[in-house]
Image 1 (cartoon, one colour):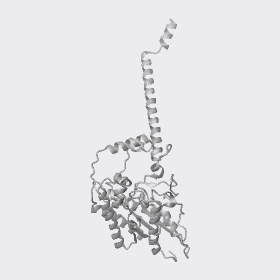
Image 2 (image 1 turned 30 degrees about the vertical axis):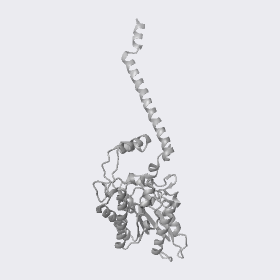
Image 3 (image 1 turned 90 degrees about the vertical axis):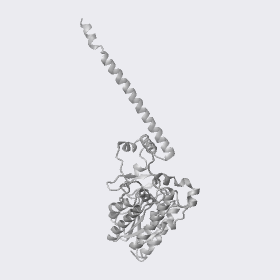
Image 4 (image 1 turned 45 degrees about the vertical axis):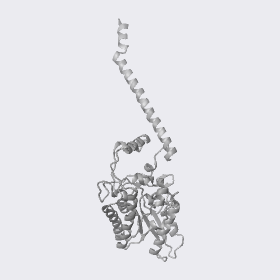
Length: 370
């Protein structure tokens, strides 16, 4: 009798067996799903490594080099390194510099987007900011004055963000002069729907979970890009820019100049250089793929219209404010010995840019001193 009772107690019930089978199947499904995710991630990272030069293990260029800022689109991470890109301890691309500024140092800050950051040159010393410093210091001055050029460019920054970059990150390093080299990133906002002079219609933050996951998973990253590309294209590419966009751009240059002058900082404007010639466009169309992709509201003709009108506006403002202006668009030959694509310079292009700026600065800072 006791044995029968023990058997009844120890024998599993049908419900227990059903639960066991359910959890067993669920576990196998979960492990299979996890295996597919891991395999997909391995494949995606391997392909990215081979095609896009993204590390198999670790973060990509954007996540390694930049961080979000409450008032600016993004800023470099101090001491960050990624391949040929080096960020110093103060959060600027390039060589280290001392704070506070040493005696007999004339510090120049450069402002702009990726064309100031100098995305496509071979390394730190090839950026036009570094080459400008080397050219300025090539001939010793009787006063012992030494030039120092700090690269304040940040890829993607437009002129509105350069205003904030100058105020929040530039002024604290005590520059004696500031060079503003800004153009292409402002063209993007001109005909973008719902124009606002602060560019808030164009620059929005995506704080979604999908975006957060896409920064960690290459599978999610590529799926997100695929879905985005498949969305209906509702923005018409225009052949001409509008005056409100140009006015906003010039107002931002004016703000930088006014803040600089109030601090006794020399201002230097530059036209924006692009190889938008008939020959370049016709015979090197692949070089303009980035322009076609990112200049979503302007056609090629619209890009040329923007390039002409924005540069004219910079020259006019420089004349009005009595600010030196360097015509980089005229100084740099419009060929692919000097450009790598529609807007970024080669090492040679950056050397030419530096030479044009050095000539202008030599007229501003006498050889005898500051």
